[in-house]
Image (tube, rainbow, N blue to C red; front, side):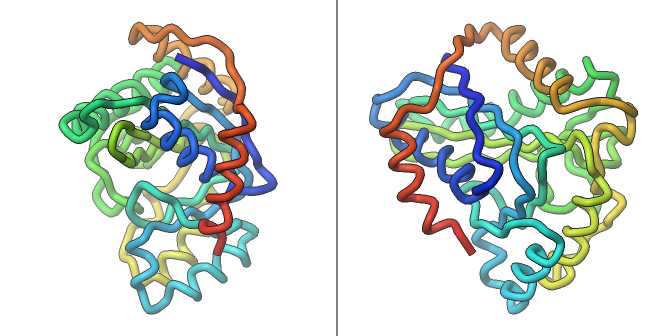
Length: 246
């Protein structure tokens, strides 16, 4: 499996588009399975459901006002916010039949990220938190109370993309933008469910978590080799990015 560490923190739409470009190429059999880890810039990634809300335009403005670049994301439900205090993960694989493994992929990802955070000293648990933002059955939380990892998938004929955001630092900033954005969208949630892993393990860094995630992949039997984004993928990502900017 190829390991790619390329990110574009100054262009959040391009960061999101790279995952989609990798998925398209994997589905056509042009690239091998790819694990991409990157540190994002301040991003508020909206889901398609959010665009139906009467307050969507106000939510986009609220994200900008908090210094978070609004973008559309391909997989996932409602708005998620993150910045350089997070580790973003794209796990892209060619799949002959992607749909039957949808739930097993979610389950495996929840277990993997929980084990990585446990290795960092976090009391990590898998399961939806009452009142959490962008709720999901496979949320990874601290103590079953604070959301730390959200996962989402996109499937196409011949390939799958599992995306994850691990919130390590800066929980207060994420909470603040989500309060404004969700208020504009009219979504009910409990702000105490938003935070970061460092709240439970002071001094924890994104690099610490990244190492733990890579160790968890290795423990699952994945053989990772360092790679890079090629020009074909980047050209396609730049084409896609225009449609993700808000």
